[in-house]
Amino acid sequence: MKKYLPLAAVLAAVAVAPAATAHHSFAMFDRSRTVTVNGTVRQFQWTNPHAYIQVTVPQGGRTVEYSMEMGAPMYLYARGWRPRSLRPGMQVAVDYNPLRNGDPGGVVLDVRNAQGQAVGSNRE
Amino acid sequence: MRAAAFAFGLLAAALATPALAEHHDEVDARNETFAQLPNWPGYWVAEDQAGTTITGLAPVATAATGSSFTVNIMPLRAANAPWNAEGRRRWEAVRAASGARKATGWGYPMMMGSATPLRFLVTPEETIIINFYNEARYIYTDGRPMPSEEDMWPTTYGTSIGHWEGDTLVIETAMVTDPSTFFHGAPPFSENARYVERIRLDGPDRLVLEFSVTDPETLDAPWSTQAAWVRDPGFDRSIILAWDNDRTGNEDGLNTIEAGPTE
Image 1: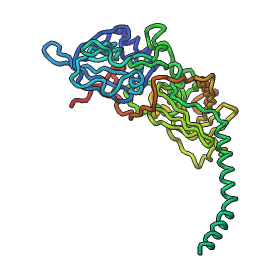
Image 2: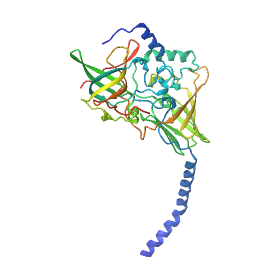
Image 3: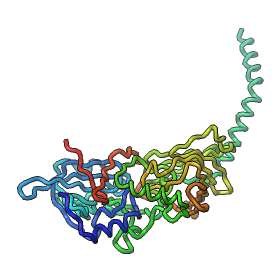
Image 4: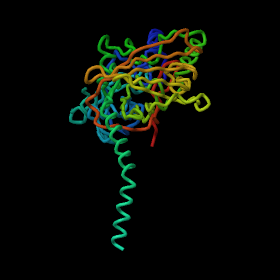
């Protein structure tokens, strides 16, 4: 899945990398693009320093697994999420900012279940 | 026989009375001291990270430009400290290697300005500052001096002695391992650095920190900065989980997410 980055993207990432926010810089995500993937939850990693949703998506005759990063579980808890908010086999739609390197994954903005309802509140 | 037991009891009570009274005096004095100390209950998050969403970003980091990259919300990284030649050399070496490093926590001083909530447990003898990774600092306020150099050695959180100046907790910290050896985003101060913090309540719901560090090995001059914390209403207890799933990798100088475990 590795792709060569446009030079401008590399320069932008290098320029902004020192201003870390969480435990790493967010330069790894393209914050200018929001995309949505529909898939099946394989695993919800309720872990520090980040939670991850592993989502499988059928694409082109094969199954692609997306690694969807979230904040720390403490903040998920504060926004109405719990370890069992997502269970393996659940159908979800995930809005996210994709990884710049083209790998299947990104940082989660919002998650909806099969009924289109938001998971958690994602509110202050 | 019964009369003898009664007499013995009276004698024992008479002998114990001065000790009991002394004990009660001590308890009363401690309670009085305790009642006069500030109380900072709640779960305190760095002010610039208040309202952090499930994405892991605070509104202040994204509001102005839609980007997270324009706001320095971790002032204790000390990016603008007056580094001397050795400090700059260390800074650049740490940054050059940081992409491939993993972490297990913030360490000191980063825990005082991270996105991880803090609690301040104030007692007459000590104040404990502890975050949601169970990273704890023990600030002794019982009047003892800083231990002698022979009795200290470098640790991730250092050794701290404190005292109260009115409602301000003043903390002196020594013997902190180079913070960048524990967390790759931390400043590379030497273990001979001395840290002074002044923490006080500013209004009912805001704690402020004045932070300064002196380190002749890495700084041309003392460096100081400020930080503040506010309460996040989303927390009702400490949510403790180990920092044991750091999947941030690095490819071609850019961070990425390492593949998830397969079952």
